[in-house]
Image (cartoon, rainbow over all chains, first blue to last red; front, side, top):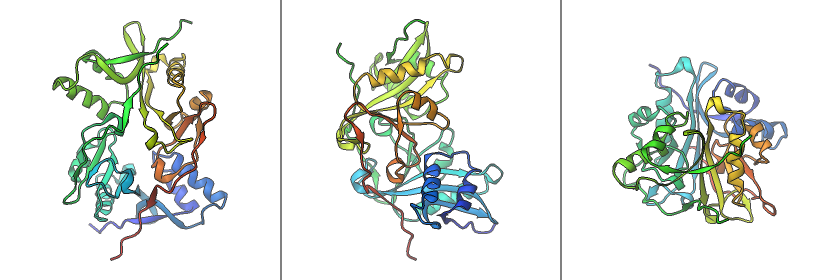
Length: 170
Length: 170
């Protein structure tokens, strides 16, 4: 098998057009389109998306963002980490290592990685050495957080950052 | 039409059983189950879920959490706000005002409300007087944030809280 090459995607109409093949198409893509057509971002500037091409076709992608230490609620010691989302491989290209290659790319930065696992994906994440965290309703708000710990990093103890809503007094 | 009554859901096996009818079943529900079976939380204690019953059947639900001001990245002036998620109405009960009743309940606390709009739901949120925010890749990370502003509250200007990943130097 040839080595799968992960590329940083450029912001342009071709990328946007490729994105239409993916199931998840939301505010991130719409915003990219608006920014392009309003010339707010330059054509071919770097996006937070990474992907793998098969020939000229984008067949797998993910979004990756570095979150500042001050917002870290997951890792001990608190530190910059990567948030990974919108990991998706087009249907005919699944189970061929594309997803794994993207995840390995994310891990190669040596920073902790956090993702919100979609329903039914926990086996994939376990295979990628990700672990599920103890669910914290305030922090996780319905997410299923899975994380990858580089050596020397452990789970952060939960902080009382949020509180359940208390009933109104009438 | 009879007035729809929104109730705070209790943590017990009956509630968990009702949750199985909803499409979204993830870490929050699994954690509730674990906590119950390990006696970590008391049976019938209050959950972050609210719902509407039709007879004895739970037909609509949402999760609601109060987020502390220090974590507010959405509102100006920064303040405590409610995060709303897992809003879901069972198929045969849709378009009967259940979703709207839950949202109105959330608004009745008088705090700003923030949600992540699912694909195709923007019409519902607009009808509920929610507005979409300018997409900020670092803050929103693939979410489609929609918010409801009480009087006197406006959108927070985006802060450079996060930075895109920079390429590795080899």
